[in-house]
Image 1 (tube, helix red, strand yellow):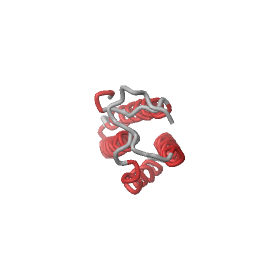
Image 2: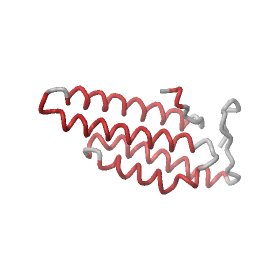
Image 3: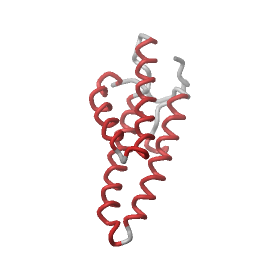
Length: 126
């Protein structure tokens, strides 16, 4: 795959098939994030586990930033979701849950667009 040259992270994968496979996996993980809305977060846990298991395979490539982005996204969304669930009885939990859902949706869509543009995700893009 080609990559935009102004990207700060280089692709160290010499085999285009392996890079494409890792890109596909990254897309599947974004899909798992999206499916979390229908599975009460179960697929988010699967996404985090997959990210951690496969993280070394993308180390040093432009996809590493997506894995970091996905891990951070999932952990924060789960944390805020749990906080929302705990505080729902006092009324403020809804604000946490809606905020977590909106934030999660933004991060999924933004990351997915960057992925299919063959660009890394930078934290300043939040």
